[in-house]
Length: 226
Length: 226
DNA sequence: CTACAATCGGAACCGTGATTCCGTTTCGTC
DNA sequence: GACGAAACGGAATCACGGTTCCGATTGTAG
Image 1 (cartoon, rainbow over the protein chains, first blue to last red):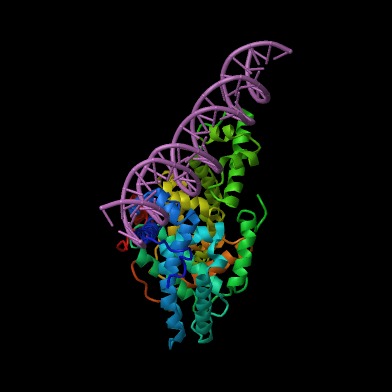
Image 2 (cartoon, rainbow over the protein chains, first blue to last red):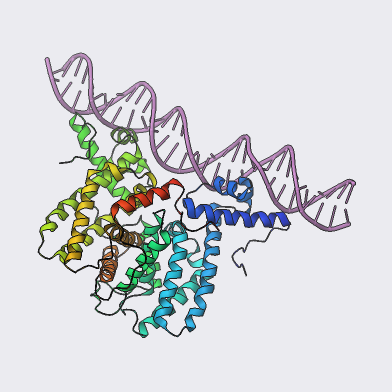
């Protein structure tokens, strides 16, 4: 089930227990204080020493990856059945809400990973599957006329991850706010009376390409230097 | 005019020149590599030593603040006349595009500042003015029936800063993408056939309050720990 | 119960980056 | 052109956080 802990599992029972506690602690700490939270904090929360954390996850990045993996899994479980839904528009909207919930819990993670180390971008079969599903849901919703046609799956990702990111900065009402903004964006994605958009629909492959350009030299390649 | 360099200006000509060069370099470096870029990089780009940078801006945060200040100023210049525009809806839309351009150039900065050190949140009279203008533009657009009524100025900020953030992760087509997403969100903000939103319109004062709650203890106060 | 290997805890080590210090250089005045 | 103060550069200092190491501890097979 947990295909992510590809590393050989510890032999001893207490080790396995600790490994799990560390992962849980990391998830909590990272969503509260962001990925920048020191490992020592994770260790303390897990009730173990730093040495233990570092033995189980030899590098901080490895720990981050593991946490992300753990967040993605349930999302996919929830999303897969949506492919058989009767109303594609409804299915898409539900998925988007679910996605934004997860993203909101680990914006800091996703971000770091997305444009810094990249990390699980290609590695994760989970990520690939998530994308496939998201794409499928979008296309069906578009075919059903529930979503404007001039939008790609990557556009959707960005729009909603942006909303998740924005709300992650506040302390209270996060959930409510996020849903508020997701709703607004969904309204903007309806086909009726949609304004003309500059550019063209962006799919995941192109986003990938376009991101790597950015990573090569900083981040802002468009526009001239001042 | 430059009310931000509140620190006593250097007496000597070359010092003033350097100060300016440092600021320009910082703006460039920060938008390219993010606020995390080392001071030494800024110094190199400005063609001065680190010591010089640190003398002019005694702390890195001070440097960041100064850069933000410099970005806000022209935006306000552009926004003020919009208050007299004939079409409030159009004025609002224009302002939003302008705002998103600036935000996109310093997401990293704004972010850092907004939820970490907070910094200029109350200090900056510029920020206050920007808010006032933004709020006014929104209210007028709503009164004119161009924008849905169940939205507050802080909602608008968050939505668009989210869009800016999302696009900041890519390397190419930033400008185009950002406008793409801003357009989608603006479509979502139209009154016609708007979906019901959870929660209530959020203004800047409440956002302020709600953010400080978050800062007190990490960031995720909503929902129980796992 | 014992012995051994797997684990653990946390101190020591290392690299990175902000800040400080001080001998040297440059500006502005007389 | 000479002098004193202002500013400079960059090496030294300091703080912080990830990673490594090793003596102490603990689970488990026999």
